[in-house]
Length: 315
Image (cartoon, rainbow, N blue to C red; front, top):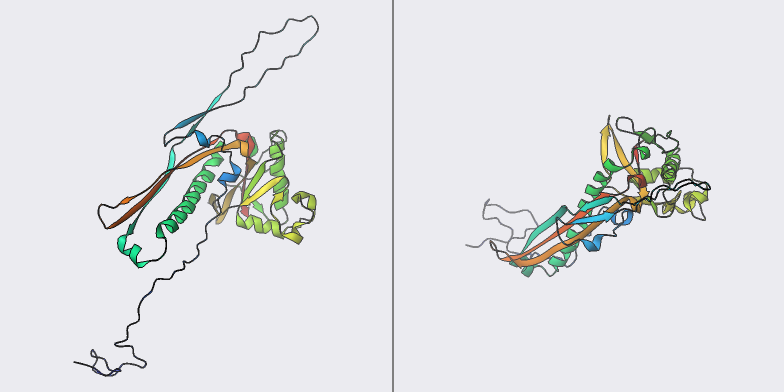
């Protein structure tokens, strides 16, 4: 049985115009892909990776020797010297005990229907997602081993009078005081004799916005020839290379999120990672190819005096 072009066999009447009964509109796969944006990752920039080439597989342990402290003694004429010191070196263990993996399948029918290199696209996404997982975990881990004198409401190994915030009492940052707290972080590291070169600061997006709104008129703070109000540059502030991350850990403090904001030197944190396995093989339970990978890593605060913690809310 045939029907008029504008008639419907189900309702016995006419369909709204225009009608498309009997017209085939094919579905197509686009040759373009929607852009995806990822959270910035910073661990590779703020940690030292001196031992990365020494790991072989998950469960490996890297033993790191620390430089010994040589005893210095006073001397006066005709005195006897003390027995010779036998310098000993403490050992730090970097355990490669963390890992993330992905496990995907590309069905044969998908490969036929798409003209995109799906495996390559998935590998790129997996790499970015791995970085985000690693950064999130390491940034949450770091705070436990930071020196007591480099955090809290009595920070400063010498001064002991700097309030960097603590659980239950975070400091409130505003555009008026944000630079002062960055300077305080610099002082905390100064009092621990941490080198000025190689320092870094990791801040959340809202703190970056406060800095841009601040009255930062002294160009010497940024290490730049122009003030931040004129060029918007966040590269260097008070001897810190500044990084912005949306992966910093935070805690709810009576309705406001208080963030761990880290400052330090690459000497303080060591990190070793490698993509241990990436393999492609035929799937057993479906017609397709399995694509999977494993990334292993270890992280260790080797010198808590080289790291500082500011615990703060957006005031």
